[in-house]
Length: 380
Image (cartoon, rainbow, N blue to C red; front, side, top):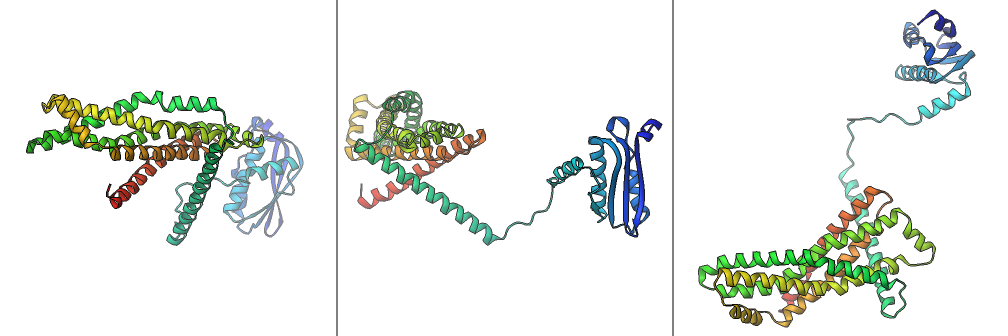
């Protein structure tokens, strides 16, 4: 420190009692003028282990800036480590307020060994979360059911133009991906069946396998999974973004039910379009099996057609269509539920979108298992 800085910035000590050290500040304490080293305070405290209290006297302090605060923080930290109490009454009011702010938030500790919660505590917390989430799902399903009943009696409030746009997005614009996936699924089923049935000379039954599998199970399920990843995610992203922008709150403030205005058109669109997409997927899958049958197994086109017609009956077709309607409702509810539950940040919208896809696919698989049990019990 230069002589000029030494004259402008003064630091001295005085022992007030057997266990109290008083620190005197004088002159101008600014960073650009050079400050006394903190070692002086450290050496003074270490020279007398009996010190239990530290006080300050700033009556002769003329000016100060952040350098003075930095010096004080070092003194406070050192005293805390040595278990010495610090009395800040002698500091300027502005310095006291800034020190209170600086010491209000403790430093973040890293690599600390945290004691895990007991097993019963974790099980209880998870159970409470599951019960709370189940209650929210049931409340949402109930509100959606009431909105659908209002639609049936003509009292639901939503824009018909929105319904038309959503139907277009869920229907015509989904045809390319549904066509591709359904055709490939039918192709795979036909190839797998051809390899096995060829061993027994029963290639003709590839038509039965592909037709029944597509119409009864794969057509509706693959369409549902495609729409969950495509449309369900879009629903969650749209409503989540509206939640971030507080548009849903604005609708509620205006007295417009978000369930009728936002959820109902999306649910109606999937209820209408899913059966049509399912029938289209069935056709594409059977067409893929047809190409394998006449190209790989040397079956006659009409022979494959008649075999498929004999295997696939209206019971199987109706079962697939009913499944597709249920899947459509589940996809719409999952996407809208996660969108309405979204937080108010960009990352929350992404989380809601992912959760909507996962929830819809899980619901589809679970409902398909329930259908399998019911059909087995009814002998269908």
